[in-house]
Length: 403
Ligand SMILES: [Fe+2]
Image 1: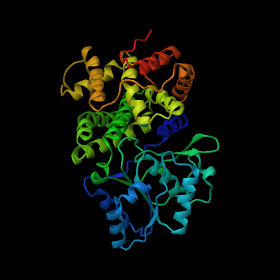
Image 2 (image 1 turned 30 degrees about the vertical axis):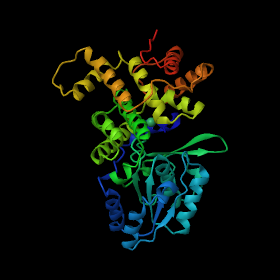
Image 3 (image 1 turned 45 degrees about the vertical axis):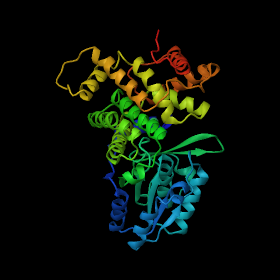
């Protein structure tokens, strides 16, 4: 999950750096190819960072057997929890040091990947975790870092950022440095197909939001445009397939690649109002990030309809295979309708029952502050616009009218 300080930092970084993309392995057994790359690279004492669910369900048995068969001494740290805390990272760091680990190998969702990033950097640093927080604080090269995501949406496998929860301040703490980008990533369809349907839908719609917000950002670049457009193409085509048949490995692989490309695009081009509002909704009601985004996306698309008309129309021509056609106003509405239809097809509800009118004012203020400090949005919202969106989220009427 992204929030304002991190996106501000990423935007600043994107001005000076062109982040490297990790090497990619994908398909059935890709995690073993990733492990092989690590072994060939000379690392023999990996710290395997994961959660207890994956470990207990035997989903890592083949990987561990492969590594041990290749002469590795594997230290397993399975203490990852959602929204990992500093204590979780400290425990992982202690395991890394006790095992004299020479690499970090993360298998899991965004929480495992984020925690593993910081463990890899802290393992080679004399700095405390508190001293590593912030932007460009990693001086020593981290332990070589490898990633096999088990969800497709956060984009953490490609970004230069990690988010850790501080239980004392009750805030998210951000670690931002290009050194957090993994060496290589494996989209192993055997792991990805275990993701349940509702999570597949929500995380996939989160990835689609990353791509659309990057594509319509005023901070976009030629490479982010290319990656965001490809991500949108892949997710629109394959997310319904992965949702309806979780065992379809080809669809799983394509959604994972789409999420990866979307992650790269937004890490340079930044996000927009979907994220600015959804972060506040999640903070108030603990709503899952992907679900909040998925419900907000159609509303924000309508708000940006005029400002982003050319962009939406271009995406619609790409998705309908009519790239050569000239701009036509109906293409704009067709693109919005296409996103509505996708959300419906993957079971995204039209409203959120949690949101309370008494909170609208505070949520709107916080969302505007986040967007103002962090995002290069195509059209600036006023408080009344955010409130109109929140009302439509409460009522379930997607055709929100902006005054
Ligand atoms: Fe997101």
